Length: 370
Image (cartoon, rainbow, N blue to C red):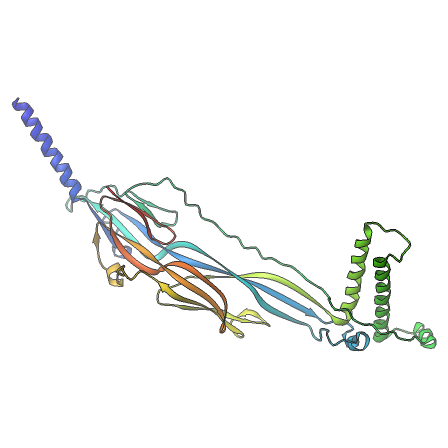
């Protein structure tokens, strides 16, 4: 009986020691630069920050003057023709995507010790994503972080259309002039006149096809023939009025918003040079209507970087922000987005708690008290 009592006392003492050791376990969180990991075992984790990817779809338009543009007014009776070769640019559309990376300015170190003398470590049980951003504390989630990678291909298209129908006046031919021209080299004006005659012939052929005047039944090929006639006519007309070829391409910028910096200049954009650093309208991003809960206390820089915390973790309360892209005084894009680095950094107790964080913005998704 006495032996049983002694054994029970030893068991109670051992149980008390285990409980005491566990109750003394401390999680210590520091700003990473203040930790010497040679002295203690630590786990580093990042808070996330958001990057904005801006894709501008640019239309580049090439105007080519016709070889015989000097005769356009006289022979086509029009002032609507390209008078010089030039290239112009315009912004057709703006598209944005946000993605997440580890914030190099928000790195923290967690260490755990049972006792200051023994420095005995205990399991932190923390889960990070591939970027080192904190995911969970206190439990492991079998989740795969499926991130979408957006590939933007440069789309190039060309367009050459002549929508106007030019009146071509009838010109009387002189037999003597025709005979003398045949024995000498043709002038530019004579070549231009011969092209006008070809256009007339094409229009006659076009009229015959669409009215059924021709005696031959071309069947389903008639549409193809009509298209070929119009294409050839446009080619001839372009020798007088010129042609415009358009292409589209995507120009991409990556922006990292910063706290207390509500305007970011991308560059300048002009009709003659596109994006450049010298001339044109200033392309700028404005961040307005930054909404952060006024009920969440914001930690100061000193409290974040120079204070040690026991059994607490840093996390983020992201900000909802209105993002505007301006070209000079003109607004060309607006959207409401969430930016983690413009929000508040806060602390949460972590002892005997299971925490899950949003790796895109640093916010807490769930809390389970053990």
